[in-house]
Image (cartoon, rainbow, N blue to C red; front, side):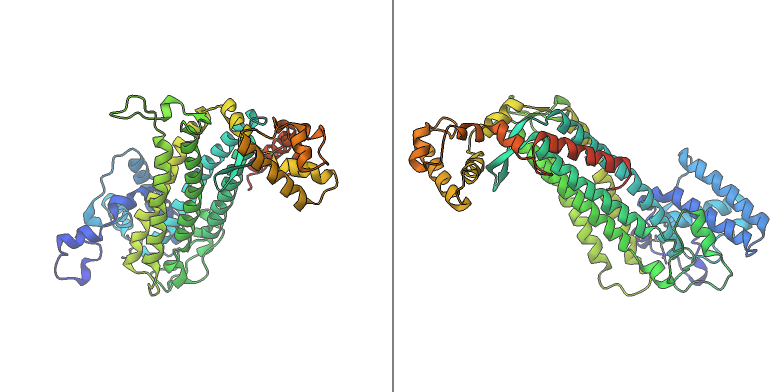
Length: 460
Ligand code: ARG
């Protein structure tokens, strides 16, 4: 029999039960549901709303149910719809009438909101750890490749000299922002809706500060209708996770390109690559491709959540039950991706010879050549035009700026002298980029230090 069957004469159709039940996916919030109920029962007892000894029995029995859940001894039933009613039914089976007092001054509407906030708070903290590990892995690899010259690209055309360290530390910055967004989201969701009731609070003399405090919230929510209607934090988290996936996807795309014969910048460890069923020679970057592909599904959930909420009148509507599968899948997807991406990144080999070869073709020192003329007193725009002519000439004759004879330089501008060869030397180009944020090895080393200090201070 349903907990709410009093008003009804007939049982629900079994198809309705199937559509209505959320236990198959909301059971993952059992610990949060039980801890929320323990805090609620303790408060009811402390305020004399239910007898203190019964409150204590409830708390004790809930503790036992929690242990049984952890030990996998509990089978939840679809009959009882969701995790909230399943736990309440179990409690009443175990301690009788005292269990029936638990739901005093509470509704499933504030209950589910508190469960979800507690659950997401915990998950955010676990995800942050995974993001941190990836940032540390990026810093570690960067530190080993401070001098590994490679081209940076614009329009996917070789552009200017960078290093593997400088290039990849860009991803550390993106991930630091992701950490910031996750912690903002946690800070904003950390208010307790318990006491909002179904929509309009309660007449019982409850103590909302007490339950909020006991559950580690910063305080109670400030409007009971908003308390049960708000799912902004779910959308906010899905949005933060979408951005995180966008970063992982861009990084994956680079790794996919870099493993190709055309680039050949990295080699993946065999443990993180796959073969082909027909082409014996293949070693495919499936992990990176899957991360790139799974980004689409996280974006999809974000759009799904926004669409579910759009147009919902206040306060609770059953549509909101749709929030869970979406956000749970976002969390699972991101966590699975990070769990594999990080060791894949750590174990891959960087082919510094290939990076350097790519850097030595494509005139990525052309800006430096123009800057050399500027140091000789030419206006930048003239220096730029002269260098452009030299590059054009090199392309025609198959030369590089390094091999071009000095007479050819001087034919374009008499300001050139022997010093130009030093100025366009790739290692010199690199070490001269001493600007904070630039690729000079000392600058990147300093950046790595800053990122590590941010991680250590827990901030971003
Ligand atoms: N399973 C429901 C959900 O996830 C819990 C809240 C149900 N409230 C209600 N009034 N039916 O949203």
